[in-house]
Length: 399
Image (cartoon, rainbow, N blue to C red; front, top):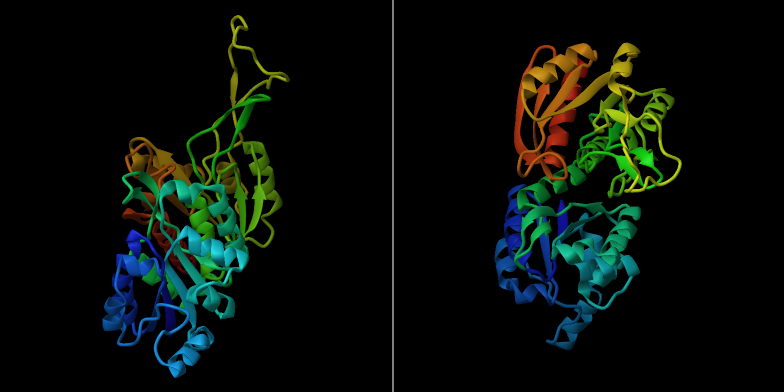
């Protein structure tokens, strides 16, 4: 395949050289495009050496009249010749240009002329990444159907620590492979996924909840869509954008999640209960805000509905996969839950560990079935999602 690889201006530009090498090793033809900012971090000669072809550095040539004429329409020919436009790193400025249709350099004009799939691998300071303007631009680009390769969390060049690091070049190369050679092994599956926490109200301004971010459930939804599944995502309150192609239903409480799960089971072939549903709710929700100086204030708790257990009791033709978030005795608890709730598989993970679990971009889990226990070492939640789906498909074929 022919890939137009655009490199934005940021310290992560040096990683684009390794990405270029990986793509060429996999048999792809790469046309490198360096923005003016990228050239401050890495030279065009690096990419020309790796690709064996000219690196494009601007909209117009400063050489002969003939060369200038050819460069004036080069963005059109590059758009027509390539199968994929990949931007890595994609800066906040590049994504703003794309979102608003600005065209003042080679890359932005190429973008408007390009009709194939577009993939973006952002990298920037964490405050720039979380800024509402950047998030609004990302949402615009998602709606257009562009594929986002999310940045990872960690130590950034600016000295801060958080989201904004360019995804690993190997992960980007794998994402490109999935885009160019999509796996469709889930094309006959209709998957219902629950994600995120629930919130159980105490009064009009307070609630009980937990630390779940929804990232694992949303990664599962995206992975299933990437592999051809029809996906219904029932989500508690999270600060995430639903994957393109998912039918997303927003809920708040455990009861609301239960009702939506059972209202949407028709035609489902696989249920993945990833949500961290609250175990308790308040017996009597106060109609007005409870004041701090109320004497003898206490809250009586009652168990919430057990959605997974009810699904197991009423089990239909669907494969049932549950999650077990534990702080100790992970394998024993996962096995207990597998049997008691009549599941086909339990995904067990230890929460409260540094760098994995709730709110992290990584996870390490056990996949527990009636015949096997499979350990998945620490990996991104996107990678873990892929492994979970592959094992689920193996169970389907075994049955």
